[in-house]
Image 1 (cartoon, rainbow, N blue to C red):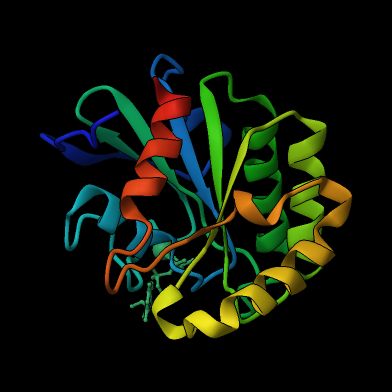
Image 2: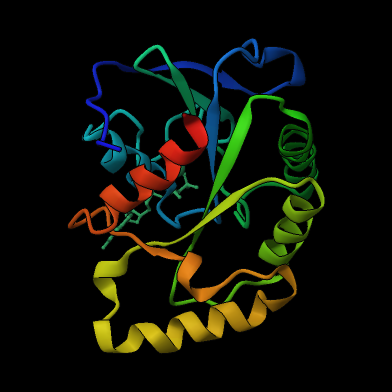
Length: 199
Ligand code: GTP
Ligand code: MG
């Protein structure tokens, strides 16, 4: 499959509350990962847009689920990063509920792109999410971000550390994609994987 030409990409809505979701009538993929892991940069790279998705804070939308309409055909959903220490526990819990509910129930959600910093091993939050996604039979595309920061020779060891922790969820090392927003490594491969789910 050829990589699609992006003719339009716009932020349709940023969702803070259950009642704000756009109608579920288009296939969508969501991007999930710890705060600062590179979700927004990855989406910008996929869409070849420098600034569609702000990679710094945007008041009002950073803590929301951001729905981007792509080519009037798909939604890309930039989920708020977790593990963000500067917000209250109560607020974190509320976002968590909204996101978990979305991950469990959204009928048109075809796949999750789950981003992981290869310099960290998955922690309790990642394991919790892997568990839930498996329970809900959600297809996951695991991505290792900021690949430009990891020497090629170091990659096998990083990958081994990560897959070891994720062993209960049967994620194979070869399922992981190395991705860099800095040099666009992995962009074409990720598009291929996305298209398998988006149709
Ligand atoms: P939140 O929205 O806060 O959850 O963060 P995010 O996951 O959207 O991360 P974002 O894309 O904003 O990137 C965080 C920081 O990492 C920024 O300073 C980016 O420039 C940097 N960054 C993202 N991707 C890459 C990459 O592939 N390589 C390098 N070297 N830096 C990156
Ligand atoms: Mg972001």
